[in-house]
Length: 355
Length: 267
Image 1: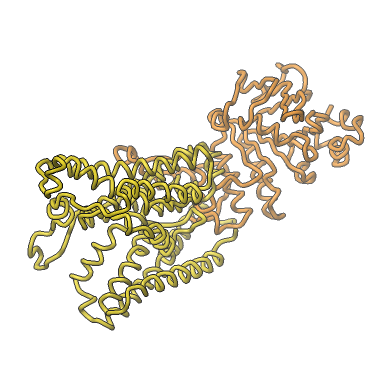
Image 2: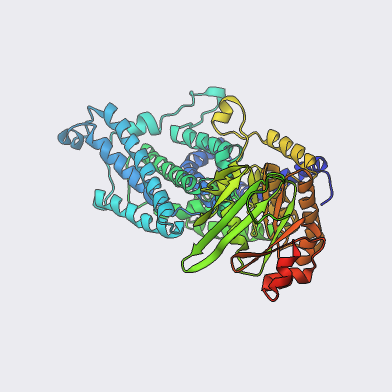
């Protein structure tokens, strides 16, 4: 307790970066092991640019959900409703898109004369639904002072129910094919650029750009600082004058927004909005964030860790499919990784922390 | 030094003067017409048994809860603090009983929590933090106040309880331009850590900023206080001079076993 502040500052700087590296290293090691095992089994079929490309594309949706839920979990909250928000956004986007792309007769015959209006309107509607769902979560949590777990468990059912009511429980098909061909699957990579053929599609680009922005926001801005402070000690944050409720409202809105974007990505990539799929994506995203070092008790977590955490289930599924193993093993493997990751992380922290 | 009567013009102007403060919680009268004065450059100890109204008084004076009757004169003007933020804007800082720090953040982040410095220009507009500036300012201020916070860059969760309290005290001291309130700052600390907090209190007083120190620990109170105010059942029952009064005097005043000695003590 006697060292000069100046000295302390210099002593501690390297130590600090070492701990933050350690915090993420376990997840990276797991990812490396998974990659190594599949490479040993399948060689270049697995470890190739094309397959790496597939993995990047497949990760984009889960990545968005994971980033949103990382913000939420760092505030010591939880958002279980993101999977339903994703589905509802996709359904509303598809419905709006079809409605404004032509008359009923035209769209039934797969003619979309006004799709230049219908498609942007649909995408906008999907994003708005995400924002609205997020604001609703945030308002209920902050105004009624209810636990986020209960609130988002409730809205998980509510939003899914709305999606089912809108669709009658079936898949919404018949959206303009342009949403896939011209937008969702459009390759932004010039053919043969740098001598390789790469699939650089808009959803993937947007997801990773959002990841980059989120990482900067969380680590370098006041918004990020307040996010950690609230998760660390909400009462202390209130006492220093931080508007905790207002910040939480923003956090749940961001989570809803990102889920909404993930919803329209579904439509962009697959051309359908299904109520049956994605229902477990909430737990997948929470698992990814936790595997990436985010603490469910709040105050801890990084976007970098969550990105790695989001890759793990996707790489596992991809590798299992390539090796011909039933991909259901993915669930088993992710579950085990989750438990082991948290156990090791907890041990490390207990050794370091004094609370 | 009678501070319980009308304003004393032949003395220094008090920084804070509260008169006839009354606070009810339902049927319970937590404060029953309390007069309390803080003069520049003094350490006032506020003591009393559990439920005597110490924390309630501090909460009223720092804007945490509103009072029902009475008035507060701060720097010569009547004030109404509607929130802790309001009191802070007047230069009044509080170190709370339960540590009001964010343990997952480091010392600099905690010291600047809610008052972050942002970078200049467009980056600042987007909320980018000036971490370098905040660290430099922290080091500079702590040096000026002769406060030692170890390991500025470490998350507080990795520090000991005493070190964490050191950060909480340093934060209050750094921002307080008028008064620092400390509500049982040593309650959770060991002997050595308590000593360093007491030392800090004296350092703060030496810079001219008065400290209101609440404690149950009589030896601590007598070591650090210039004046001791005793509360019992929501009333000021005695003011003692630690140079002349004894711990027994203080205890009898707190428990009400002998009012005579108590009221004689400080006069």
